[in-house]
Length: 552
Image 1 (cartoon, rainbow, N blue to C red):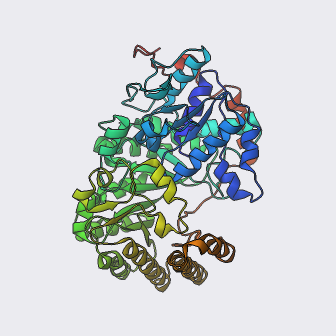
Image 2 (cartoon, rainbow, N blue to C red; image 1 turned 90 degrees about the vertical axis):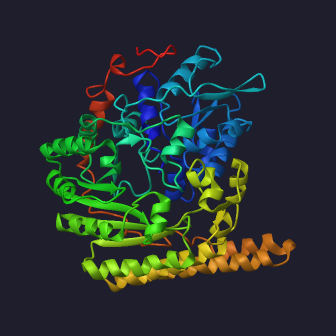
């Protein structure tokens, strides 16, 4: 799924007179094995190309796409953006296929100013947030465009997505992710930035301060959030995922939005994140404000000391279990609990112990609405995270520093060898072995307690066994003669290729009840209305920040 900021950038550009089209190369490659991304690139005729490099696992593909663009369109500017682009901007701009890096978490206005400047044949000396090259010298413009609220832009702009389908005549190119047409989940983004400072997270408070010059989260107002909900429900009856803990804006903020949501009487299910324990009042409010709701809790570990070191759900298991109990008592449809392998102060026994704690929860509550999951912190330790910036303090031993070192890791023949770190408490082998032991245990546990059916259980078990077989086979090859490795790896690819997808859980485990889209006729009418402006803001209504910093 491409970053939802692409929709707000495209919408902002189109609101200011430019044509902007999103082409999701990755999704089309997944949907059609015969799809040729290079042919798509070759036949593109844009005046500017933008590439997202938001999370670092995209670093190899993002730069290779840029190289293909330069091969086929050598004179067309290539612009990078996203958190990872912002972190590695000074290194990224050294690649001859990258012309501009637009830094920060809110780049709609800087990108617009950059394009306007280039259209006038000028150099972007006065465009905020831009890193570029002037006569061979790297120029880093001040990161000054840091909006303190997010009501100036549609985020994400599903209105843009629908308008784009009608305007450009293709739905495949703009689809957010594979299977979205069959199982649409939409997103409601509360903020850019985060109040938490989790040790492993590149979206943490200190990371946003370093990468985006943001000292505190920028929030969408409750009124704007409700308008976002109305935009979504105009075309979708599927679940709406609320990104970030609603309480991050304070209790008044949360209550105001839930009051508005209750009055709106929305039929879609809502999925809420919680970053810490909640009281009975909050679940009563969720229950009243929604027709249905579910929860996502990334508690990371059953060990209280490990959780405190991480910085999320830094509370006792007693408080955690009280939260689960109150949620189940007040209408919660499903609670997804996420554990992680590879955390500070986490031992091998701690990691696999998450299974025993999950058993305790399922026995205590005797309720199949609780679904535990485990996964490794992989493949990379997030740049900008406290653990990446201060590895010794958090007990990490990093293997990568530069973007090129991370790119090389992604060429490794198994995810074990892609890992960019180990910890004082677990080696790379330990992290991999603990991941599989915990994953097998979670699968057995969920089957025993009827959280998953027999088919899902057997499918996940087979995939895990197959994935582990790949790990062991690759290790055997790498321990053999160096001159035979490439040939043997290619043989393995033929024999074992295609494994690994959904290895840790079933295809449908991370889904919710979904009534899909509204009827096609209504969707088409909505698209035409949006396209011809009946629901569009005029340019005069769009917030603009001039180079002097004034709104115009």
